[in-house]
Image (cartoon, rainbow, N blue to C red; front, side, top):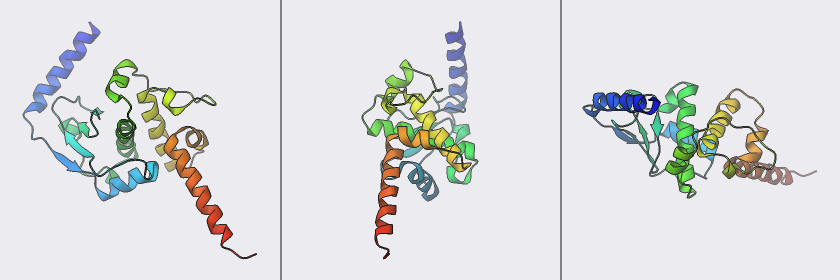
Length: 181
């Protein structure tokens, strides 16, 4: 019964949006800056397209192939000019793009494990969390960092955050070594 009502909602929203004009664009400079602030150089952004698709449910997005698809009513011209909530949504979806670029089976992973909630476990690899848990972690990191909260758990678990921390520590050591004592 529950599955049937989900399909009815999907069909209803899909038909309503099917007639709307499809849109597509590259990431804006502001969105690229947001992405770089989280992923550094670990995410290839050149080919990422944001698109509308009639088959995506309202208030959802999917990233099955390296592009991010939104329902037409959720189309945004520039996420970097939006609320923190919408910006974090983009970061969540870009995490799925990163997962694809790492060779992860995002669609299968999302179907098999829809859990978003997570608990950090010492020593547990980022890749041992579900696809959606990984994306939620990165989204939560983005929001927590914005609010100035402690993000060490994220920075020790998420591979590209670890890499950025190592690089920033290395850069700091290099800059200190140039001072004369």
